[in-house]
Amino acid sequence: MIEAPTGIAVAVEPLVTRVLAPNPSPFTYTGTQTYLVGTTEIAVIDPGPDESVHLEALLAAIAGRPVVAILCTHTHRDHSPAAAPLRAATGAPIIGCAPLTLDDAGPRADAAFDTNYAPDRVLADGESVTGPDWTLTAIATPGHTSNHLAFALPEAGALFTGDHVMGWSTTVVAPPDGDMAAYMASLDKLMARDDRIYYPAHGDPIERPQRFVRGLMGHRKQREGQILRLLREEIGAVPAMVERMYVGLDPRLTGAAGRSVLAHLLDLRARGLVQGEGEAWKLAA
Ligand SMILES: [Zn+2]
Image 1 (tube, protein in one colour):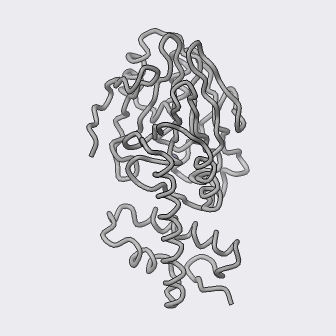
Image 2: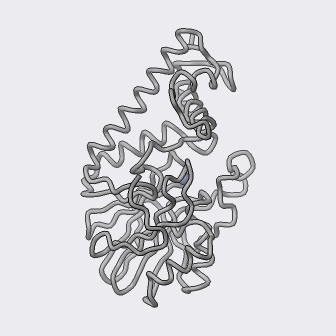
Image 3: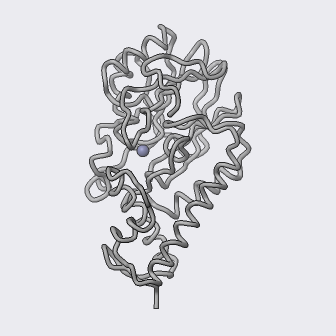
């Protein structure tokens, strides 16, 4: 467990300050890390859960400096709900990922999503927001969620990776909104970059990003290989697969592991390697 000083502004490097939200859990590790970028004018990345103590901690860290933008990497409830109260307190616009549209909100969004998220401006892939000493460029990184953005800070060679790449655990890719093929393509996209460091929303900074991402891709390929082997043994129900694949897993994470296995199965089906649905899967004939 990393040192986790909840609510205290930690200067990570000249342009980057981190404030940890009070929401530790088996899904968030020590909690959501909100980042402040800039020295005289500030951008806030992933304001976090709507908890008054966290909002107070952010305002204390901002210390009266103008806030240019409130950016959200995606709309899970541990990332974006504080955007609205922070906008009310600072007057700053919410700029960043798209909301999941109402059409998508039916079958796609679940309780993990912040349905109240209402951005003032949505950034497309490659679009930027700037301050006096910083630029933040949106890098579309769908997979964990369909609306996920990472934000590059070229002045520091840093990338804020949200939940796409985390410093403590692999990312949950939960269908129907989560998509394994998109997630892998978004890892490929990061491999083509030369960032010096990643700042994830959960867990430690990642100092050798390319090597780390290569490891994540290898991990998913390994999972895929395990799934194909289990199907060869005619183990075709997701819970039985989880039991074999995730030995010693925290029982609270069994559901999330099952969603990730399903994400792999849907990807393998799209590639013509397996067939089935729900709880009954087999190798393609
Ligand atoms: Zn998330």
